[in-house]
View (spheres, rainbow, N blue to C red):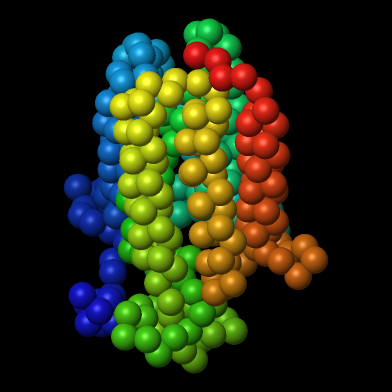
Amino acid sequence: MFDFFHTFIPDPILIFIGPFAVHWYGLFIVSGILAATVVTFKLAEKHDIRKDTVIDMIFYLIVGGIAGARLYHIFLEFSYYLKNPLNIFKLWQGGLAIHGGIIAGVVVIYLLAKKYKINPWRMAAVFAPGLALAQAIGRWGNYFNQEIYGLPTALPWGIPIEPTNRIAEYFKFEYFHPTFLYESIGNFLIFLILIAGHSYVIKNKKFNDYSYLLLLVFYLVPYSILRFTLEFIRIDRTPELFGLRWPQIASLVIISVSVIFLYKMRTKPAAS
């Protein structure tokens, strides 16, 4: 496996169908969404959420999540898109920032949970495992686009990056950290933790706000720690503040807010 990563040069295009190109990036994004949908349906049934409600929410979460992730990415790369406005619409080239998707997802879940009179904590907890799994799958699209790689490395699993895709400061290097792989593995482990957490809640019938919030925090905090750590070796462009990359700032905010909400709810009586 290490030899494969160390020698294989991925092609962003999977296949041509007439004049149209099917990109690996799009395939992995769609595959992640489908896998997340299956997981969410199964969990929703266990948590007494109607299937038609889940279908409705999935639609709005996909649309809102992709829009939020794209807008957030454009914000981070505003100077580039100001010079290349048509590239805003080229989603197949990559450029979906997960923090933007999370923000949009929170808004969508809150609004639809109110509409359907469903506990928003329960709804968010049900969708969290699918999100982690979708991220684990979707990150492979970055590999085929040769983007979001890390610092140069001599490790046996370092991936070769074509000269046209190398950042100028590291043009003379050939092998780089596969940060997509690190994040994919981390997200899959978070997915397994969340599934174990849901199994415990369902088995012990702990259907209350605190349990649902705890399940949500089991996604938000571990992912934020994972992302904060990986940012030290990522070399893609992003704004910085106080010596930290912008995704690290966002991760710290998410961790802080999660801990505060968890602490406040811990003192409240459980509600079913």
